[in-house]
Length: 130
Image 1 (tube, helix red, strand yellow):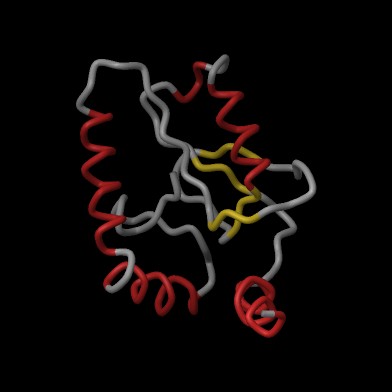
Image 2 (cartoon, rainbow, N blue to C red):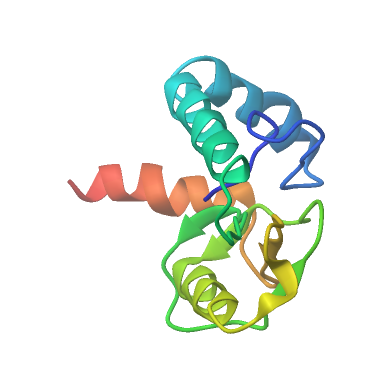
């Protein structure tokens, strides 16, 4: 799951002021509101269950050629992006690692591009090719 302030009060996926003060609140209030509401309800159901669960928080997902040097951390993750391959590897590791049972760790990826570069590559540049 992608963790955000909307889901877990006090959570911050980034140290970027632009992202945390402009992009994230704008997205949470307008197009993403129902998604975040659904995520909060889903997490509450999981937390209230008697199951052994782990909810892994990640940054904005993107494709990368392979795994990076990612870390699993407790609490706030510092980074906007997480390659899908890193999230997958982290989720698979949780199947045999009981360290985060009934916890909500984050997967942190280093060496990812800036927010503006990702917007350019994923949005503006793709639109020009169409």
